[in-house]
Length: 253
Length: 269
Image 1 (spheres, chains in turn green, red):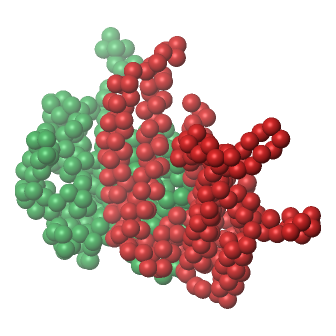
Image 2 (cartoon, one colour):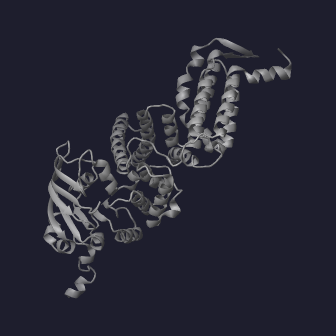
Image 3 (cartoon, one colour):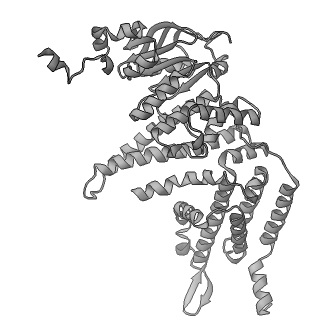
């Protein structure tokens, strides 16, 4: 595939209970772009992401990944192109050992045994998790689980990475190494998150969602300076962009 | 509480053991599945009062277990953990079947007691055999072997999903149990109604969770075909193992070996 474009056009999705989770959303993400999708809890971020790898098929509107429109026929190709990292690593790791887990995808791609091994080791070394390969995933720490979960996706060599809250439940150091890791990737990245400081580090573009609708879509810095917008969308300026609460009173004096 | 935790989480230790490398682990999974099925068939096909003739099967199991380096105590614990089912099946036998079979001095042993023991024995052996099979092969590989042996793929996928689901169910159940015990004081009994809510919650939660795991599998190209790392190949040693085990099992099924030994030693015919 020459260009890894993600295009969503007038997408709507209503759950069976009547929740209008995604309401007429359109955007276009270009090759190599790194985009944050931010919004309150229940704003529709996860539902939107589920459309990008074909788990949900659009009720209204269109999703286009690279050269393929999202339909039942293209779903396999799309899942090869889009690697999805789940919010909860435990959902993503289901095999008895880390090695088996990372090998699950490549095996399903029908690759020969040597190639599978090579891919697994490469993916694990990229996420600095080689030493975990014979451990059972459920016994790992949160940070290690996240690293392995990302390795399972990398082993499929996707062109586009979709991540749901990659920094949730991580300690500061694990969070930092994850950010460094992601910064080193040249994939097209779509990250749904509440961690706006991470967004500052990783994403040049931000899409803000409220009640299933796009409230803003533009350069990250510009959006984060719009305090009114952030407040309406249940967000706050990233800590780094807020005045220091310890120093502020002294300065004002 | 911690006790329940560890007992159940041990289950996945079976899978870890499947990654060992012993004589038994190296045998082709199809052969192992076949031998295990013959073993189970032989054990369950005995007459309901049989005990002595079943015992050699225990020896066979112990030898295989030793070769596969599976810790006996671990396996025993697992068997005890599921034994309530067998006990429920046979618990009323001693009451219903009062026919005396044997008199040892003042004690009369009834048919019910004998058949109860026989049920427990068979149960232990069959479950043990299945555990040894899983611990020496791995569940995915077993399913693949059964597909290769002619089982429809859809059953294999069902089995695989069921197996995954058990872990999910246990995990969610433990979490809820923990949350409940933390808010239950002085060992006060919990109302039946609470348990009903818990059971309903558990079902819904695990369904949700199972769906997410299924999604994770789909995302990584799962299409209903089971694929494993090791490639299946029948070697001469595999066929040899099949022939020998088949012969031994058949021999044990047709002749009451302990009784023969007894006659040989005591000289009574």
